[in-house]
Image (tube, rainbow, N blue to C red):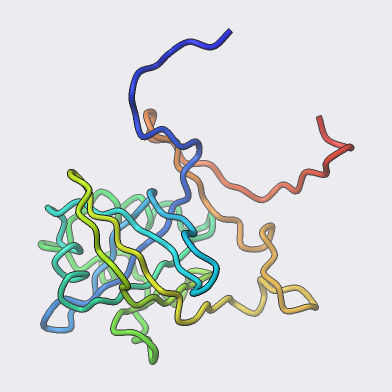
Length: 184
């Protein structure tokens, strides 16, 4: 039997990503986003949902570009810091020791150390109330070569992406492959 837990944006689990933007002066910034996902195959597009009060919101509106950076489990301390600290008062790259790399494709920084980067230009921004959803057209995807297989495809076990559980604020690592018919 299932019980109602009320109305909630409950997607379980949520991916954990760091979104990179520049402000008007070109200072790089990061924010964590758990509300993100694929929205279209052609043109290849993803979404991020951002509150208007965040420092990154203004950057997104001005620059119309962002990167989505997928961290591996070894960067859990850094990703937690990025999510709990405002870029208005803190240089998150400096404080975490992460390296900001200027994209040659979009006007946004990416994180050198994280295994996957998705470079996006903003196609649309839609105010939904508390959050604005930004639809980003994927301009390029970069994956660390040691996270690719022989066919040049990303390997989840090597990337070791992090998931976030809404409600209790816990992080989990993904990467165990299940096989239908063999796993129960």
